Image 1 (cartoon, rainbow over the protein chains, first blue to last red):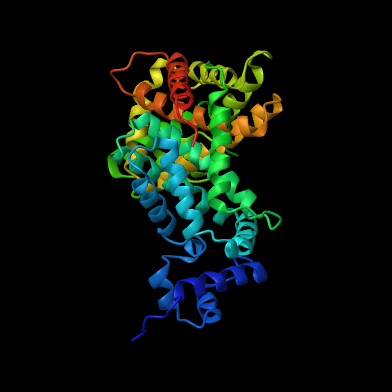
Image 2: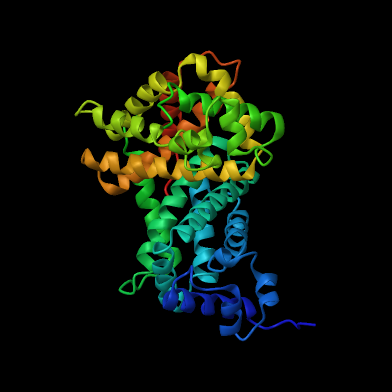
Length: 192
Length: 192
């Protein structure tokens, strides 16, 4: 019946963000999101399991991150491998023209506890995927856990900095610089 | 009407754990938990907001952690301050006689996605509280974030080790040793 719609996923995301901004997350239904995007409810559910998921892009980010870690040069250390993945994410998911959208998305998430919770759980899922991808490169488990958490901190800070309209950095470079800052702080702590 | 019940909270936790083990989390109601504990449903809701919360002890752990960081000697560095808090938690929340309960609790959480999700969100809340408590000691924001994440990793690993019936360590010492291990790994990474 319903045929495949080009860019349906992206149209749904933009429609959802607009509606959440206009009337709030709670007062927006999946049907309204689909209508705004010129699509049907069933198309929505082919792309997203529920309303909460629409701003979190399914598994795209996980895929980019895991592929980026896997594709890093064989001789790269664990932090270099995740920096390589952050470069890939910058190119594929956070090009300069997405900066304004990112800022609006962040504001909507910050205003809704349910979305903040979903974002937090997504972050934990990404960390778990990074750990697995690092272990497949032969990184020992504890190192993989530590490096994935340091990368998580750097990613979060870099994304905050990058989604500021006043920022003009390329995401991958900014994230790599932030990761080096985070690592410098970790190095400088005295052991308990 | 209902009078205060000594140890009501602890009785509810033990009753809930038994029922979750016997018939699963989904097949247990709040009324059944209260009945098993010899208490009423309204007593349950005075102690816990919902069924998911009963194994997560409200804000006790956050309170111990924040107090432990605050009470650490003024000259202690950030990692030493969190190690001090882990000592406090070992004494107050994880005495040796709780080890068997901890192992059963972990098994029940591992078996239920809803409980794993709640545990993950609790962990994020604890990290946020640690960051705030460190900042109140004058620790710079980025250092506080890094140290809180390293402590989170150490805590999780130490708790896994400690709740193993074959383990005989005291929690605080084990956590401090694990934190030193985690820090050694962080130090040894080359910057990207």
